[in-house]
Length: 306
Image (cartoon, rainbow, N blue to C red; front, side):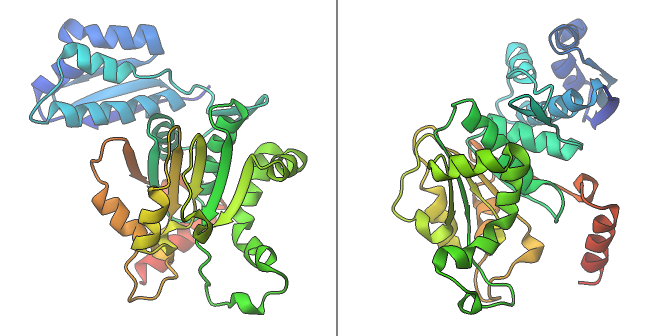
């Protein structure tokens, strides 16, 4: 078990009293219920304990701070309820005895966002686990019966190649575009189970165009590579949500393959849905990259010379 300590800056003594409670009553409850140490001074609050839990509580604390600074701040009981929230994800994602734990604070924030919101928008550079964590969390929801289907969706936008030159029917032509999603499923479930669930219809892989006209109930939908959606496509897929639906939208705005004249659906969604109840949006960064260490340096080099 790895322990860590994080600090969140505050704007005065009133905020520390609101967060820790009168006489540190909230801090004592947090320690008893979560096993985490909550302390600090008028300039900041610290959280110490098991790494995964610390980063999850930090996310809640930042959200509570926003409420405290609003025109209608919650009372002491409201603050404590928000800090306690649902049970913390101690082991990350667990499927049939196999555990897949986030490896950075940003990834823990991402997992918590998916747990607590029906719609999560996440952006970040290559290698930050955007696709894999969404697929793994969706597999857990399917395995535990919380959803009936896992739907993997992405726009089929050509990046320097033409689909017409690829052999086979439509399904064969789009298969290469879905390889990252398929690989994430196989890593989580294994080849036999992935194939069985796909053949049985519990897992569906479909181009974005196939979503039009559908209503998705009790389904977990992942819209991957969303930086390649138009505004109309983004609105279309987000309005497919039915009762019990969970949607995760992932993308990297720096790798958009749309024509420059086309407005980017992901950027518009991030802007227009900001602050909408039930929607979480977050950005992963270079510190969350889990591929080869060189990936972060490559990403930085290209960005610095853009």
